[in-house]
Length: 550
Image (cartoon, rainbow, N blue to C red):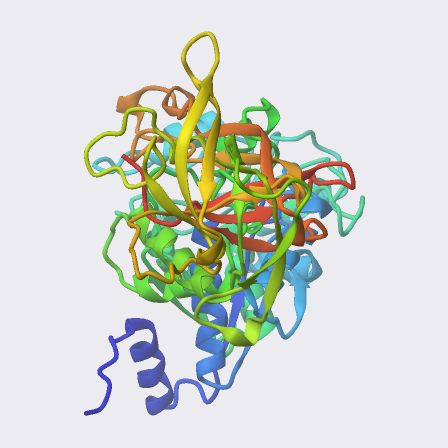
């Protein structure tokens, strides 16, 4: 039986365009504004833009939409490139909207000459007042009927720097009574005396996004301009600009629903506030859903791509549960992450009948299901450390780990039986004592007896101290931007980061590099953080073995 694949409405449109001869090729672009770091929502757009071009044997360019120099920076340009490459995509060309400023400017002059654009002296507030509402038509600016000659002269003077920021703008002359507010004489150029990270001081007037975007698409040769659904109401203006500027073979704009992920924040303005106020450790804080944050946390690129593939492409608004993303991360890492033993909250264990000074090798596979990943040798000795949670002085029902009189298996090593324990002045266990069965090496007893509990351990002869950062979701409400919940910063989860400083990790991974991911047995997946140095390893929790979010 043939596999049934979900329909992709974008590809349906493209198939029809190719069949009808509207286009004989497919070219897309990914056009982020370099005013922040990319997030999980951008990952969906990247997969759609690049994936569509790949399916049809076309090309996809990276185009930095740098029309607002007041908020843009080369730092963001470099970060965007790194994120796309990390996801596994390659652009055909890396371009900038600013490269087309001369062409876009010529188009603005063309509109003035055609009587389709005029210089307006109204302030930004007055323009908003004149625009009208969803139920009331706007009214014409008193400057709307300036002559072509006057508009050309004023626009040149704007370009020459004779006016201050906000003193004048260039507006398209369309229809102030249009039911679509975007068509009510939108501003297409504004004055901004700000150096540009690409063009320097060449320009002091800059095109608005709705004017620059369709013209950049056209100049580049884009056939299908794929964008998120909030631009659907801008499509009439997109088409108007292309027609009014007499563009041959105009691109087609197709909109899809953006990705909304619960318990997360993707607004660049709000993310920037978290960064600037020190609430998070930069744009790549592992609690952020920026691509750099997920990479630092240890998310594999494959998991992000699989996640985008699973949520699919639609026009319908929906909110995706964070647990689906975490599930994709687990699935990807389960096959690729080597296993290691780490004790995050150590409790000393002494094997009283183990020979003093004896140290022996225990062979453990790097992955139980992938023998090709090889194995490693860990040291076993009289003094070990286990997790505090693996011992209870008074066990609860169905507790199968260590307690006085109970026998458990030490992973890959021996059966041990608890014979006693020490406590501090508050009654908390500080050290436990066990005996071991020397005939049970490898975790099997020759007499066939069974134990129900298997716990991990590290030896004081073969471990190193590490800092482990236990991350959880940054917000404690599904929609942190919902104003009914108050300011978004009031919805921060106070337990989103817990730092454990005295963790002990098996010595075999002491030389692990930044970005290496391991499954710490029985705990979860952990990644070596960039804050590690030769004196201290730092591990980030990537995701627990099972979802523990409540």
